[in-house]
Length: 380
Image (cartoon, rainbow, N blue to C red):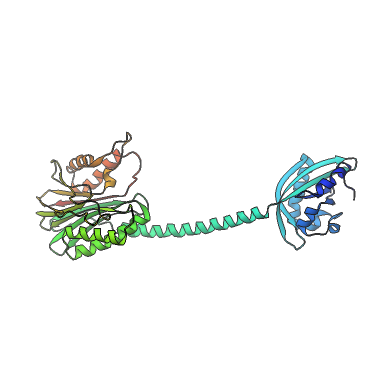
């Protein structure tokens, strides 16, 4: 077999290259293979020189390779990713770069092979890792869907309790959130209304909110005074969570079933409101600080008392309602919600909740970025 005359001076150089190099003629016979190529494939040189290249490949592989060689002869060069057959039957992934040359003996191809097995292995490991991540992500998303469904099921339904009608709304900024609302009657004595807002969003906030929710239900079921409930909840989070940046605010109202009297206790929370249609809403401020950070956050005189009349409407909400911005960057704040409450109090009670939400959405620039909870009650 004759090596192209043009390449004879370069054989020594080709022999010491760190890449595999072969020379083949236009009949696909191998004329030259350097030591690196021999090392890469494991074939003895005598088994390679003079051989038809097709004998080393499967029919499918050869069909692809033949097309690449035809392209190289046609265009003068080609570059593609393929495999080298190994003596042990394996396949070595390589990048093949071919150049067509011509001398008095005819057309020839000089082909270099760069071993990319480590790169391919890394890519395969990355694909495998990504596939495992996708599977894990699907599991997490399924868990989140279940958690979101459970959390939505905790939202109080509209109900009538004695002389009081209640409506409620909950919407998390993400699939699950740190807000919750609670409406629980106590035998024939009173009705408890409560909203809570745990700092942050997502899974961590939801877990803390779920623990607080369970404790609140137990305490209200035991008829705990509202101020005592705040103290116990504060101690629970300070002692058992104690993570910097985790805190919560809460507003709770206990309404006599006759609808004549109400107790209120708030901790770091936006003020509750009592409104008569056509009148300015009365504000019931929080007397205690945010909970979960300091042992003495609850004020000694934490509870307010209010007299109620038929037609009074009670409004509890979280700061996802108030802390929204318009297109000019102005925050709605409590004053803005107070105006919305006054305006929507003229509507039938069954339309008031949606009226408030519509006005907030109309003010807000873009979608909600915080969890929102809203509890409304009307005295008959």
